[in-house]
Image 1 (cartoon, rainbow over the protein chains, first blue to last red):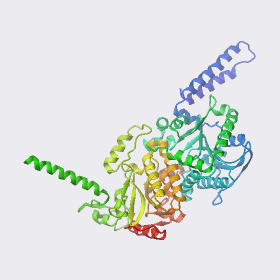
Image 2 (image 1 turned 120 degrees about the vertical axis):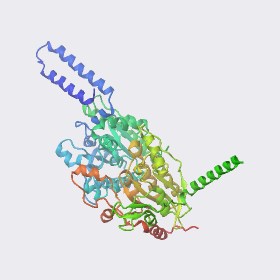
Image 3 (image 1 turned 135 degrees about the horizontal axis):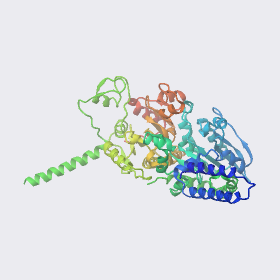
Image 4 (image 1 turned 90 degrees about the horizontal axis):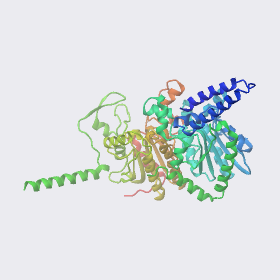
Length: 310
Length: 291
């Protein structure tokens, strides 16, 4: 059973549950059975998620966006706007704050929760000015010796006329080069969808984490299917071939940590994950901050250098 | 007696083949009396004339797409090119069905092992670390081997304090190698960064087409960026953009001249003038001329 089918089934069961007359003591037994059945179905489905399910979960409308983590993880957060060249891209949110006692620069790709929000954030698809804002904030972080923490959640960089006119390719390329040599620790966290170069631009880091049900790929499965087979509806098949799950990438040695999600996905219990995440990031950051700059940079270079060496 | 001659004949044949192989980088085959139609102005032209005119149509100046080997003959001084990692062949890291066969077909069709040739050679006497991409080989797409070869030649340039020149021609990341291809963007950009930090010159030459993961990494990181006339250069492919915005793109969109106007390339250079332009740039940067 796919995740979508399961969600439908559970919705049906929950409806039955809500229709039960709670004043009738005879219904208590049925209620218990139904609750147990829901838990069982959930557990079974989540134990055998297919790559297609993961794609669905990574883009789940209830999945918390970067804003949720920003609020939960950082104290004293101040948003900083603009690239000083053209404008302020709302699909990338940047700023400074404290992770416990450590001052950090935070850069996050933002998807919206509602239609209006999504239009405001351009569905998490940055323009060049977004990637130039990233560069500005990263250089600022370097100046003040602040580590950089990035949150990745994008279908990809925006493919449009304005984006091309203002040099989307150049903006991403500069991000990659800058992050490869930025003299402060960088931690990247893929929270939902990591799509193509638009995601990679924020993912060059000393430590890369991925949420258990997030994905990261060279292109969206739909795009992949339409390039390879000229048929975007075969996205499920593509997802399987592409090896885009956190588990696959961990196996390839491309990411360092998988952040566990509760059964049912992070949206069922986001607070729990935030507490855990704070702990993991803090620990990793302390370790990275203790390294000499030269060592840090050499490690980062080698880490990417060996990806696909032979 | 006959056998002896036969044996000798075989040997001579072998030597000839070996010599031909050695001359791969020094001689270009020019076909006799063949005509070809220019895809732009539709005029018939003698292939020989077209090739002698640097693969440019003498009537309408249309720049034909050229193979890496042809580019090498046009730009690199005869007999100076020493190839590096030419033997490298791609594997199938994701186990994509049909990929290995496709690679083999492309190797046979294009007579090169991968979508880029790298090495050290001279351009008008100036010594360069050189990478030339081949858009005929799986659309010049960048997988692990292409990424590795670009990084390798860039690191070699940094180590030997050589200027670097990359002729890009690529549709972007190689889909069949998925996430491995994507990571080559970070890897190559990092190597270019180190070359920059060493204070060395990097000239990026963009030819038709340079898009996707190649334009969004090393191709757009040159100290000096040259482009051939009317080359398609951009991040997203025109078809993807048209589908996204649901309208037809204007004429000349994402072409070299468009990028020049928007400030993303330094110069649009005709192929016939390319070698001379590189020489001029080299002279100003004090690159040593060696005999």
